[in-house]
View 1: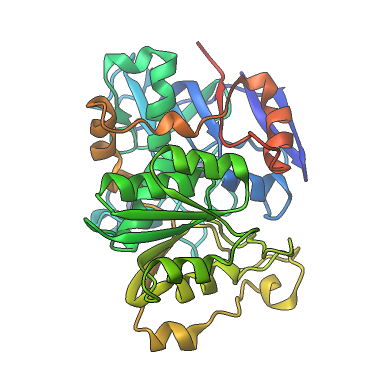
View 2 (view 1 turned 180 degrees about the vertical axis):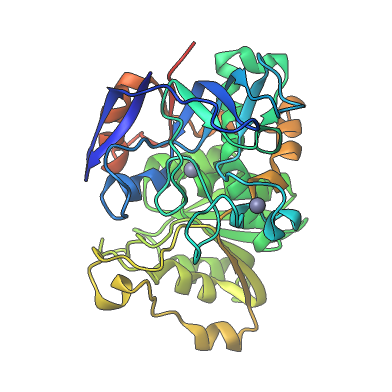
Length: 383
Ligand SMILES: [Zn+2]
Ligand SMILES: [Zn+2]
């Protein structure tokens, strides 16, 4: 089969690799019909992680089940399924509590928890930017879809259930966004847009989205959020001026450790500290942007050690709370699927490009350069 293979920093190619096989009776093989390139793939693409060369990317996967292990009961050959990016066992201490984002048994490294397809430090699993994907514990890890999911266009909505729609929603859960709230989102990438969309679905009264890329801010505006261009205004001052000086009720961090300050310098603490300043006393902050324990290629000493100059004094003084980490997709994917089925959510609005698997290398290049108009790429490996 064909797969997108990582050859080294900023170098991927589509290669012929051996087909995945059923390794355990609880596995299925899925023929991937829609798979996404994610912003978090870029950390690996840029060589900022220890992702192995020769391995495939792709953790946002949807397709048709083509082979079923003997121990699989619910999922059948021919089912259309979308997989959470988290690979989870369903029976460990964390999975039992719904924390599939920190599964203990699918992660072979003792000091880590949590596994994913084609992801650095999250187990040895191959990615789904490929024609076929092996899915472990398939009854637990596949969300079945209706017949409408055979339609390639419809798949563009459902595939967002693998990661960015639940992750955006999770940001608003961590931030405790409720009916009528005023919420500020830092980052208008696909996850930030999904966080804004989720806040609006939850009935937030005003949702600001802070970014500096015109195309992304335009998308934010298209769903009813208020765009804030931080290359033109100070977002903290702006949010305060809009809220009688009090700040937003809550906020979400959807940028991550490669955040840049307005001068264009990479600065891991910039969005975190802006959130502390632009969220009111006792407000909650949800951090779903990716941060890492160490970043040897970072520009400054603190960041190399995964440390941020965080404004903890002001955070404590304001009595704020913060939730962080990867999303337990399985906690939300069923409900969010049903919103799509009912026509009440259409997360495909983030998609800018629909391409073949062969076009993946050029897509990575454009997406990595943040070229205007490249918001979200979906790939179509198989028909
Ligand atoms: Zn992703
Ligand atoms: Zn588990």
